[in-house]
Image (cartoon, rainbow, N blue to C red; front, top):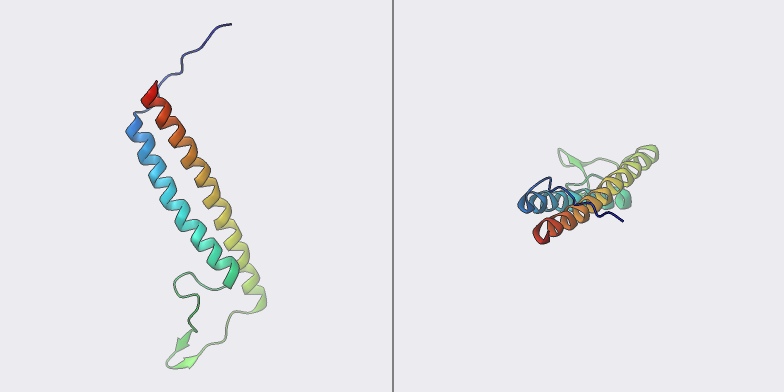
Length: 99
């Protein structure tokens, strides 16, 4: 049986930088997705009522709330996909350091 040597495509630092960036973006997307999925409100101030010239504005309609929940799920999916990318880059970085 032959053993194949894998070619190093990038330096270990590049893999670790990419892993850190993927992790940062994943945390932001997962946080945004959880807020939008649970509250069906915006990300910046999900708990505060919206006011225009000291008059409260009613919340979003039911169809709009459902749309925000769908957007939240999409953000969650992208965030967890980037977590997978973080793990892959960490593994590649460790393998390039050792090998």
